[in-house]
Image (cartoon, rainbow, N blue to C red; front, side, top):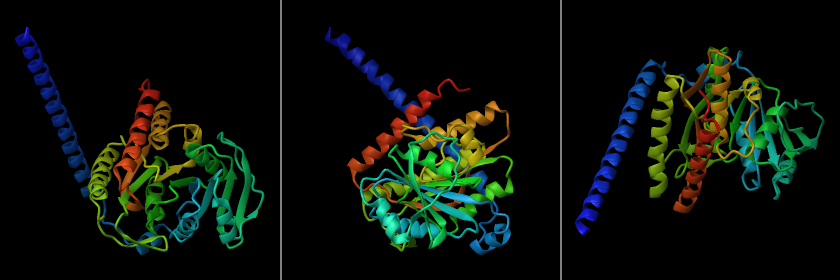
Length: 343
């Protein structure tokens, strides 16, 4: 009897071992494929142009862009973040901060620092969202608008921003992210070069931990001093400069990061905007865009370009990292089940 149980245990362990080996080999094969595709894509890319040269080439034809910034209880960093965004190098853009029913002094800080006043601006109501309580503009700059609305979550705030904006392109960015000064110009380049097919563009996200940040700009780049963010530096480099570049080269990119992504407004409105309540609203939107364009049998591109850089703070403790990754995995599973019937 004991021998029979021992044989079954050995058999189960053997099967499990082979499964783990097979899974590891499959993952390694996929990584190698990504590396080959990414290397080929990089070899075909032209040399990286200087910011001044980009401005000379595209400054006069660059389309208007709306920078959408959802904010919820961001009173500590919101003013510095907005100043940083207003200083971006792009000829025609507006910053729309969407105060998503913050319970702290987020709106008051914006009103005081930018001398905001209420104003009337007709806007589209193509996408559903919680009621807007007021629109604010600043006499200090014509680029800044603030939307004050009832709390409805990040996707709801983004939909409100899409309704209010008038630009043909919009860029979504987290309130605590930092863009390189020329990031908008570089992200807009595919929309200028291929305006008929390009519907979404993502850029590189890099870890800011350990770097020197002054006045909303990364002044000196350094590696993190703690081990956990250091591991994430390697992970982010692999994810963006290998995986996303590889899948973009064959037009199968399924994720444009919610921390920094640019989209064509008309196509996003056509698919109903961001899905309210979704834990993976960025993945959800890109899947809907793929499905919409394929159903319409239209040629399109969802691109990743490595040059536009957005900096973000990575978790430094296991508890925060666990919550972040749990949210990511739950969001991915939610999207896979929601669209499992899509062909």
